[in-house]
Image (cartoon, rainbow, N blue to C red; front, side, top):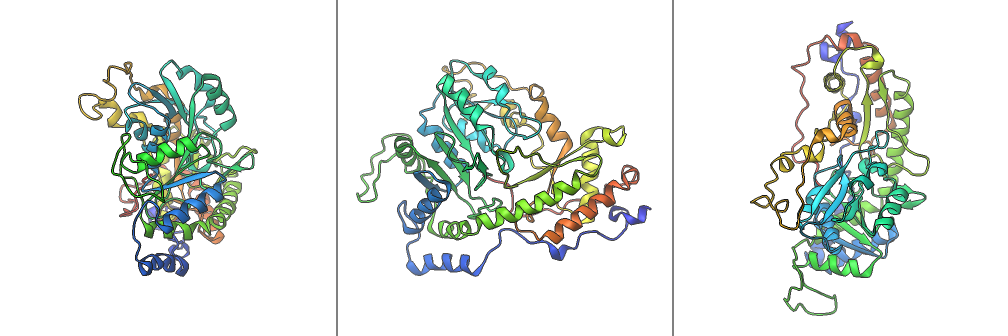
Amino acid sequence: MKGDLAIAGGKRTVPEELKVGWPVITEEDKNAVMGVLNRGILWGPYAPEVVGLQEDFARYVGTKYCIAVNSGTAALHMAVAAAGLGPGDEVITSAFSFLASAVAVLHHNAIPIFVDIDPKTFNIDPKRIEEKINSRTKAIMPVHIHGLPADMDEINEIAKKHHLVVIEDAAQSHGTLYHGKKTGNFSDMAAFSLNSTKNMPGGEGGLFVTNNEEYRGKANMVRMFGEFLKPEEGRKYNAYTMGWNYRTQEMPAAFARSQLKRLDEYNANGKRNAEYLSGHLAEIKGVTPPFVPPDRTHIYHKYRIRLSPDELDLDMEPDNFRDLVMKTLQAEGVDTVLWQTVPILGQTLFRLKEGYGKGCPWSCKYAEKISYDPNDYPETLKLLADSLVICSEPYPIFPQPLELMKHYIEAFHRVFDNIDEVVTVKTTSVEKKPITGRAEIA
């Protein structure tokens, strides 16, 4: 009956009071931040909370070095710079990611080259990488999208064969495992984000990690205006290279350190919730839950499902069906978003290629002519057309009670058991309430 669906006037399925907002801020978190104010040291590249965060995270991930910075984008840019990339050099990365994966390359006048995704993992497809390699290729930047590790064995084998640097974009993958080791350990350098949407939130911030002392030193100069600065030495105000001010501050560092203590707990809770959802959603015709290969884990920074109108014998375009299902689920109280609507290269930045002005870096005399066509990435286009993310901000999957997942499954059954009614009901009046101040930023 139409009245049964919330979008048609029925009662919502999901009780709002069950939802846990993110980040969860405890008294321990507050005391950590207040400790900074009580100490009176609010900034500095070697201030105690910054140094402590670097040591704590390096120990957690298992790398020798960590540098805390003001964003995941900054950490990625530092890796690009430390690798010695510059005008005309090309970096291969995934067509499906947040913009920062490509912008960090552009920041150092290098050129991002995109590869289509594996339709099951949503990560860069290693089988498609070598066709994009040429004499200008200097690095590969795999993205552990949504918290699922990319195929690092295959990627590293390709990189070794062609003498390429590997930089992990680990912005969404804090604590996830590949062959029993945490991401950040499978490349020359890696970058994590501490934006408040992440499983390890710091308000804003990022973390650069490496096992290579030379890369660590070069990255640190990029963080510090191009200066070479040791903790025990005074500042000489002499820049050796191009540098930026990518320092983080003591209060967000203290908050991130406190959150790190609970990261494994949240990841385990998110995994439990995701496995419950996947087990039940797999039984619903027209819904495909996320896939996890047996040699790795998933921390479900994003829980993305795919929808198939064909399986339901519906003559609809995938994106129209997705939008209809999304609005109907939202009306039932299920938090859903799209999270990216075009491949990275489909954004206006790559269509106009104005860059820094006058077409740089694409117009640089060292660069070859590059064109970007979204139609060259069919798997990415299919994913963006037929998928959506549930358990979205400000209610991500990792802090939620299992009881909420049970209501989400009830809502899915309510929608898909009445799918014929769903495709005929008018949904124009149902809109997702805006979430101010919680944009996805790396």
